[in-house]
Image (cartoon, rainbow over all chains, first blue to last red; front, side, top):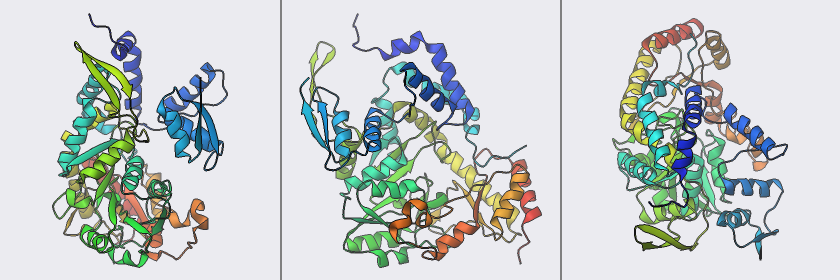
Length: 105
Length: 382
């Protein structure tokens, strides 16, 4: 038997009923953007992490980019990060037109 | 019974099995990022529009932003567009570092007036971005002619005009690059944000693909037995991670098969509206001979607009309000040097225009009710 490195489908099958119910709830609500599920998840995930605020975005790159923008980081600034990471970290910094400074881990 | 302005849920109720099947297919495939659903939908939608390349994105905003970048638009450049559009159009231009320049619209089509483009062209102009408003394509021939004469790119905002034809062809409405929205409530919509770039230019398509997927084509693999073994990533460029996801692609593939019948239904409803409302002093939508309107919205212009909207609302009939105030009068753009009176046609249309409920599932009974409500508050045609 082949063993997958990650088995996305296995996770689905283990919680199939809950996922199916959630999907149906959203589709039948007729509200597909910024609905109660979004604000609900923001609060629930923030509280899971012990944080006060959660703002959901479209992907991890957008999360980093939004955070950098909110901090006023931009052209001429320097951001220090590690080099053994997903490129989205560097992309987010570069999209701010800030400089990336890599540090060893 | 209240009549909503857009029918978000009705299509699901009618095609529940098909849509559930598509969602199930993706979830059970285990492929949630790349995968065949996205590339299949890209091909199918491009083919539907008669264009060679399609690149799925996570919004129409992303489609416009990446298209502008692919054309080399950036700081120091100018892009000509209209003030009666959503802020996503101007945001896409601004985010490249370029400046947008507004020009006046045509009072009958509500689209960019091709005769008013040239006066806005400077040495910095790099592109024209017409918006095909309410489902009607802008007059593309003269726009392409101006573009050719001044060596400009034409990137169209087709968010409202999926399936619309110019001179009997869908691809003639697209320009060099066409940007589409598949957010729910659009002619072809999924349960969230989605979009696409269409182009016949292979180089532009490749550039958009690179910008859209940050590590597509960067994986190095070797085959060991039946396994593809990853041996590293090589990044040659930075992208924006704005991809369309398979879950939306699968839903859209199913709905694309139904799209033409929905467009036909919208056109029938528009015809029925025209019959019902012809005796009122309203300006109904205009469809030039060269164009096929897909009626994402049914526009009417009326003198006492706010009064009419309230009267309809009292009867539970929702209406749409668009670009009020127009972009050049928005707080965010107050320091751009534009004033009230700069675009008299745009401003007048913004004071008079509403859109009536429009979706394929509207019933004759609902249309008669809307007509009755309008007859009670709009004066007869003189």
